[in-house]
Amino acid sequence: MTAGALTLLGVFGLAILINIPIAFSLILAALVYLLVFGAAPMMVSAQQFVGGMDSFTLLAIPLFILAAQLMNSAGLTKRIVHLCMSLVGDIRGGLAVVAVMACMLFGALSGSGVADVIAIGSMLLPAMHKNGYHKGFSSALVGCASSFGTVIPPSIVMIVYGTTSNTSVGKLFMGGVIPGLLLTLSLVGVALYISRKHGWAGVKSSDPAERRRAVIDALPALMVPVLIIGGIRFGVFTPTEAAASAILYALVLGVVLYRCLSLRDILNCVIATAETSAAILVIIGAAGLFAWGLTYEQVPQAIAGTIGNWTDSTHSVLLLLTAVLLVLGTFMESIAIIIIITPIVMPLLSQYGIDPVHFGVLLTVNLAIGANTPPLGIDLMAACRISGISVMETLRPLSLMLMSMLAVLMLITFVPDIVLFLPNLME
Image (tube, rainbow, N blue to C red):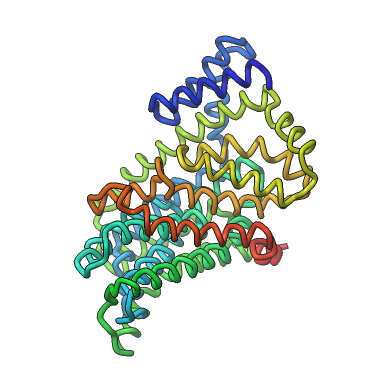
């Protein structure tokens, strides 16, 4: 590895160690590299920073965030939770199952794990604590279930990966459906096992009439993923156009049907969207600049050559990349990982014949696990903050949940048809 590459990585690692925010760590490393080695004029830093965000597809990120904000303000979250409660009933551990199902369904609206934690966790975590559930268990459960928002479409993480790797975002969305459902089922199994072991309660039983009312009430919310996935699958619109359609749909629901969205509510949603989108796009721009430095120093080619000399096995390469991603996910933000790692691994995918859609879904599942792995574990930390506990209280139940997610990751790693079945139908 060249002196320039070592400087770039070394400065970045040092900045992370002294707790500089990830975006500024990336920018600092790139600027030091340019100053010391003079690889290009300093103006390149501004060009690459802006160039990293210069993509029509990335416009889907603020649009999906705004759609999720509007749907939450329109009360769709409450309707989803009520539907899950009416369907699950008073089985032992039922409230834990409700939490997983509600997180999965809201993830199909928001595309963001943290947004899922805040929306669902704020409603269900106090209820779970009131019904005797251990705070560590319930926080770990909501954190892990909320991370499925990065796997189940629409996914902000998939949009960033698709843009960075020039892979069809529509195919990535379709590829995430089955793994997302498998992750949900695996977590439901863990939740039921632990809940029944401790005798934790279910929810109030509903009669058929109540269940029908709950389904009808939540039906508009359930139509959102159908609108997005169906529209993309049949070529009606692109992911960006799907996001814009979701905003229009949310406005119609909140203003016309439910009549609960005021002008002030809409303005607050726009402000929250601007703040969240700005934070994401700064990281995207900074990571794009950093990735340019790695590419200039030919780090992707060097790594591809090293691994190529080490093994000829596609599965060995995937397992190696999985190990790297799991480690990175414990202390780095997901979007930064994608933009830095993607240019490095693309030559490997081509060399070993790995489908970029398959790898993209593996990447999102890896990052979902990382989002709940200390010390960073952003989804886990958000759930713990709502519960008012430390991350240490979640470790015992968390280990079982992460093992179940890892089992699904291994399954889709060795059986790629699970991921590629639906995307192949689009061809």
